Length: 91
Image (tube, rainbow, N blue to C red):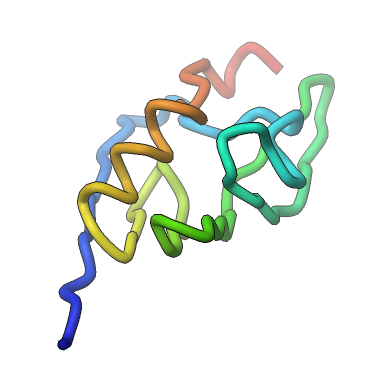
């Protein structure tokens, strides 16, 4: 059976919508998250890839587009690892 990919696009209007660096690695939620930590006074993660043994995969960037194996996977990821919304001008 072919599973349809869930895609969500974002318009952040210049604001940062990033993952916390503390999310990188294997989490109690079951998600294993990979991404490069960026640093300029603050630390954050833009592009990421995440896998879960039950829900599958979620990847992308919360400032443009995120893809998931299903809407259920996306919702579970967001419930456990919501993006941090902040202003790049605060750097």
